[in-house]
Length: 113
Image (cartoon, rainbow, N blue to C red; front, side, top):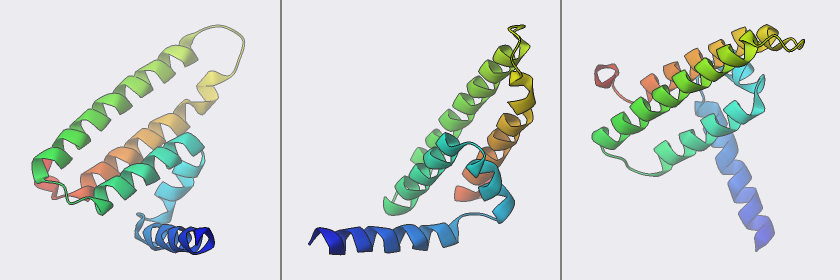
């Protein structure tokens, strides 16, 4: 029973991976595993549940606000003079943010955002 459930969930995962936007987005998301995991989780939630347009808009706006806060924290961390090379990862974080916004914008009609 558990083996068949595992196989079904793997099959479902592979079906969703085919629906993920183009490869540059996936490559950038893989550069930060946590971002990719959040991205995939949100993808499951949006496509498994029939959401109203207003709820999707609310999710998109709140995620964009969270992404802005995340980028602000990354900039602040990179600006600290503590001897590490945080600033080297800043472009990756900004690109992750941009790709995540593109993904959110592609969930529904572009007029919503």
